Image (cartoon, rainbow, N blue to C red):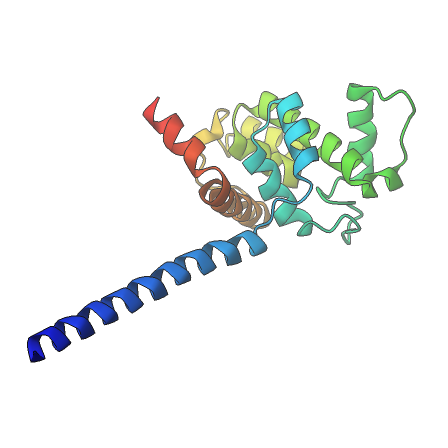
Length: 198
């Protein structure tokens, strides 16, 4: 009889422990989704597909740049979700050629900001050949990254880039890559495992 009670206690404890662990895992996942949301998903999906940029990279840039605050404006004048500088926006418009020219304040509109931000990322990826240098150029500017390459401070094919010449850009790249890793883990883990098995 005592053995049965002991067995029941052990089984009850094991069941409770399993329930607590399961609840903790689900709570952890829910908290991560709150901290790393997928706001503006329709826009991110549309423009990521249109311009061939991975959604996880777009979410990571938005997360890092503005924390999903469409009204954000930096001390240097970058605007909106993806923190686009007005001069960069003007240059991007010469490439996309909208029917009606847009003003810098239009960057507060999430659709305009995401469209031009994702387009900019696609141009940077095309120019520099990999996400890491594209992220660095998004932060420091194309001219800075081209200067680093021409002065042999970074390899021209910097996908294996480990040291970025300026600490603030290095920190920025690390933050974006960390956020991207979390987005990949939370929302795209099925996609990652399928790609690894292909």
